[in-house]
Length: 299
Image 1 (cartoon, rainbow, N blue to C red):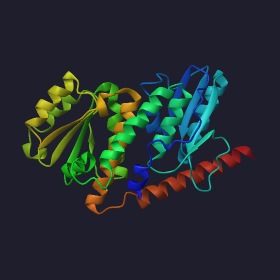
Image 2 (cartoon, rainbow, N blue to C red):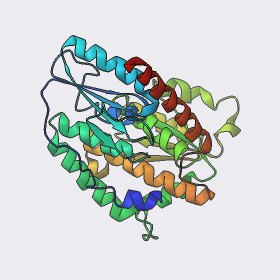
Image 3 (cartoon, helix red, strand yellow):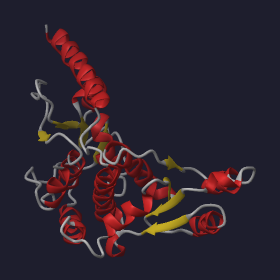
């Protein structure tokens, strides 16, 4: 059960903690993309020609991972690959294997944080996750922030906003709400004011059953967006970084909180938090195709 997994997730990372050679490039493909995006504040480069190139991947994106690994090796960087466990798939090229499922994001992100020499931030993230686990646990019925927010989102369409430096949170929450909570949300990324000031003008009723989530720091632009939205939709909720701590620890903590909210949404809808049959089938087909191609290359 996902809630049980989430409850035991803090401090469950058991991978390497040694820093690798700098400078670093951190690139994510497939299921590794979200984890890589959480590292944006720790590593400015996606690709590096020296030092260590980290590639966070999953079996369905093996071809892209191999291509990027080849480019990095030709450029002179040492390639380190971390991936998500997939039944029947080869793991011989992976330096670290993360468990499959939603929690893979946590394990891959912590692996990359330690590998890039940010042990202190990785450990601080664990502190934030541990505090959230105590607040969001299923036995906490009163004042549970994740359950309360899930109730606010029930039968509503979430609108997701974040500052330009935190746009990864928009993608992360959209992914979690859909994959786990089985809820469609709308992501507002670049220049949200241009969209929001016109989106509800012609048909005001389209603002009904909408709730906006401002993720991370609320910038002056987002404050203006809030003022616009408060006159057009049902509710605006600001979800700041836990304990006011941004950067990588805060981003990972907001991912974790989003996973809890999505799990409670699925519970409220009576839906499974497991991947949908359609997603499982697509990932299986893509993974098998990647495995067949890799075997062909080795033949």
